[in-house]
Image 1 (cartoon, rainbow, N blue to C red):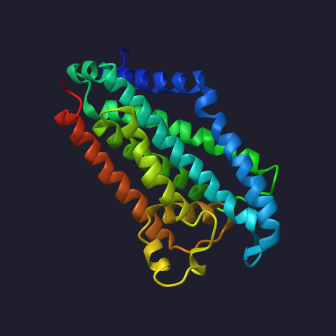
Image 2: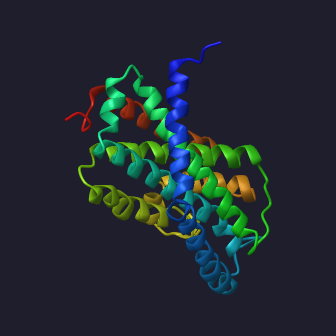
Image 3: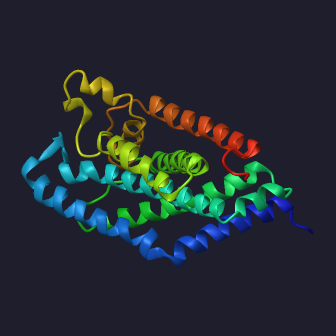
Length: 258
């Protein structure tokens, strides 16, 4: 029984991305492990011991664990596809794929799947590291996994759009530095948004990362400052819009065909 060509193409792209991630693991996996360990030591143990409970019954280190995991997932999912696809664009591999009978959705799905797998792998690594500093109570496994998956998909797609428009490697670093980092730190990773005053609390609700962090925190700790329905609506909405944008860019060959 023959295998469908689209499945072969998807498997090939995904396998290439996985091999790339594992081959250069000191660049793709190790940095997150080291960075998050430092966060746990400095913010969790040293600072957290002086803050106490951030919300009743939840210590500071327990509160920030979900946010730190999500921060690692966001940066790795975004960074993986933006650098990988941009490298393929510079090497003219993308033009070869566009010239083949391979549909645009196969190309996009293959690259996104590779980035999502890296995001999930990093999430597991950071979660295991957190067990050395605190105890994790998995209250809602389905919400926990679906939130990580949706978040990774959203930022993989965002990284893809960045890679399409990027003309040099410096363009890849602009968005993580000036957009992702501020949004992540202002997304309720290290603090409760309910502790903010007006108008900062209202402004924070315009940050999509706030909904992702709170949904994941609800899955792990059973607490959230955001409605789960709204949080999933935001994540699914961004995923749908960015998928449409990514497919349109591929179909039109924007920034890809010389």
